Length: 391
Ligand code: PMP
Ligand code: GLN
Image 1 (cartoon, protein in one colour):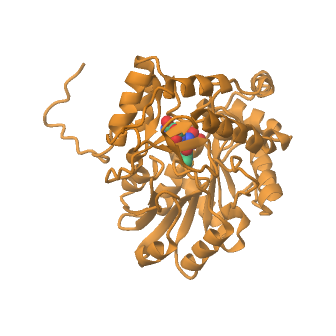
Image 2 (cartoon, helix red, strand yellow; image 1 turned 120 degrees about the vertical axis):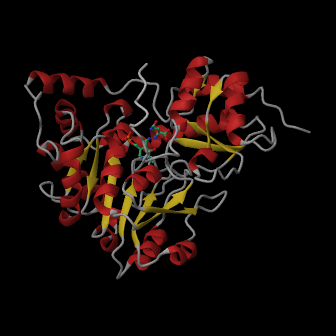
Image 3 (spheres, protein in one colour; image 1 turned 135 degrees about the horizontal axis):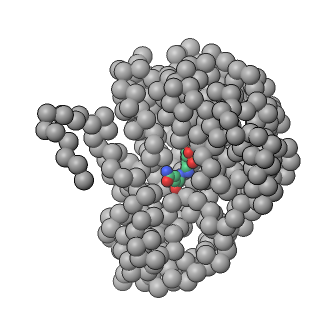
């Protein structure tokens, strides 16, 4: 332990940022040997074919710096997927950038596009990295609440919040933690609102392949008017169950991508080479992502059915791999306290939704991650069956 000299005055750039709620709950889960349905990561193995492809890439000598915007074959494969799914042709040369996870794509896009004094609209509950990314850029976050309990965007509120200083609007569909999705009418509203403005839309679409019940993912890429002013962000960690790989990407028109790359090349410069080569080949077969909605819907339904007998009130889940529950019938504790007690006394870790609001707004909701083995979900549900309604 070393003491920093007193005259080395440190002024934090993110004074309000503590340890993320995901790390806090995962550490607590480990300490109490609880089943971890908190942090969003799978507890089952990835496809062995993907592991083989990484080994092959390493043996083939792909162990040095790849090109700054990403391995070209992967950029081509990402562009082909966007064309196939969303009918939009991104140029792999100038409009696709491979990043170190979606987190870096979000951070880098915001650094590249928001200047000090600019306003950035984000919706709360907000994925935890948005606000710090805006603050690190010296820009001003403008948090707007999603409706409760539907977690939808109230477009009238957005219209009222837009000012001549608004530079970015960050949207997340499917939504984490809201589990809602944007529909075609939402994208039209967003297009109408940004028309004739300098606003760039940052679309966090990491759960693009986790949309259920026959709905389709409305990517910003699909919308002609929005695509030309948007950054569309994806994550292979989510799509191929490999959150530890940290490979994601940003799709944007060339002029926007050029600015993103200016920051990208001086933050990470480039991303792990063998992983990129492996993903490029793995993406060849569209069934690898087309099977995801059925795979995850079955897990969602398994957890929903297993929790049906508890006093938890489950909210609808249209997308993402999270299920939300109101616990008002069990306790009137704040969500953070309730979630911690669940770990200690029931042995199940969750995430309190209050952590996703700057002012700690608390609707008494917790989040379960269902990207887990069926057996894990059933064991967690068996523990949660101990919960009793207050009278
Ligand atoms: N955005 C959202 C909405 C997420 O849930 C996550 C992580 N689960 C990320 C971004 C970060 O993705 P990555 O792990 O690829 O950085
Ligand atoms: N995105 C994951 C979640 O929402 C966690 C990512 C992280 O721990 N930073 O649970």
